[in-house]
Every structure is written in structure tokens, then in C-alpha cells.
Length: 113
Length: 110
Image (cartoon, rainbow over all chains, first blue to last red; front, side):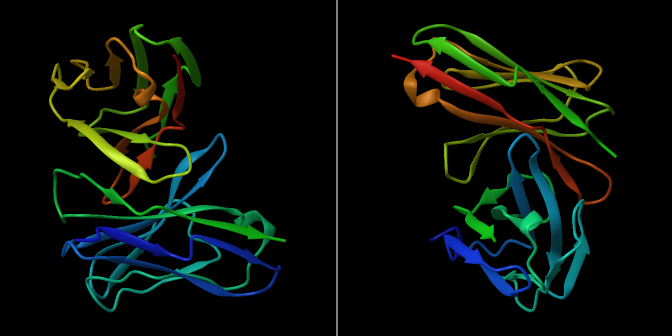
């Protein structure tokens, strides 16, 4: 039981490049989400999904796309990277309803130059 | 939207001392979650509070939700270096949107 896994752990991109951050969970959780963590701002929700085929925007969705074709995977796509997207990205999953104990992945540290 | 504030921003205590971290909401909370983040790692769930006046404990960590359900406190008794990290409170906003406070950075000096 690996829990929530994220790849890569570190990534450096140039402005304008695109990439996909991978997230997978093996707990059969319906709810998955992506956060970014920036100094002094805590974690902010980017996108979330309540089940396969269903996604919705969080607090800071601009510049990111998601899809949920399976229960296990929830990739986050950066369409055209910008320096403002330099951050640490966390993926999380939880059962669909309360208690909302979210399980977090180890994070991806992204730098956009 | 829901906003969570935490105080203090950072805290340095001597090992063995007690400490309290506060989380205040701009709206009534329908579920308040405490997480701990070790430096450079993901978040670990500590506990969840739902009812006004509720109190939960896990080992040396106790969390309370006030009667009005707008403030929660996290209390650590006899702190140890293993308690060091960033403590974040979180809550459900509208729908399925989950929001976090900015975090409190705790250092415990041996």
C-alpha cells in the first residue's frame, strides 16, 4: 500500500514549457486534489475531483488543467509555465465524504526560470 | 469564502514546555482539521473536530473547537523535538473546496 505517490520530486522548467505532474493513489479514494504551497500563503487548492470523470476548480486554477480518467490517477498539467508557478505542489486524496482525512503525497518542487 | 488565520506565525520553545497554536475562522466551521508538516514533506493528518466544544487528544497533542465553532486551539504538552514542524489548520469551504491556514512553524530546542 503506497498511499499517494507523486512524480517527479523536483523539476525545473523554462518559461513557456509545458509539463504534467503525476499523482496516483491506491486507496480507492474518490476525492483527489492538487494544492500549491507558497511561503507565507499556506496551501491553496488548485483543482479537485470527486470521482472519475468529474473535476472542478479550486481557489487558484488559472494556468493548470486536470483530468480524472481513472479513480487512481489525477495528473496536473501546466499549459505554459510561468515564474509565478514556481512552488511546491501537493496531491491529496480522501474518501468521498466526512471524515475528510486527506492523505498527502510527498510533493513536487517546481522551479520555473 | 472561508479564511483561516493562525497564530503565532512561528514559535520556538524549549523541550518540555507546553505550547498553544490558534486557528480562527471568518465563518462558522463545520469541520476543522489539524495537520502537521515536517519540513520538506507532505502533510500528516492529526485530528478533526466537528462539534462545538469538542476536544480530542492524541498522545501529547490536544485540540479543541470553541462553542461558536469559529476558533480552534492545538495544545502540545511537554514538547519534544519530534513535535517540530509546521502545523496547519484546514476547513471545508463551500462545496468541496478545502482551505488551509497559513501555518505555524514550531521549533523545539533540545
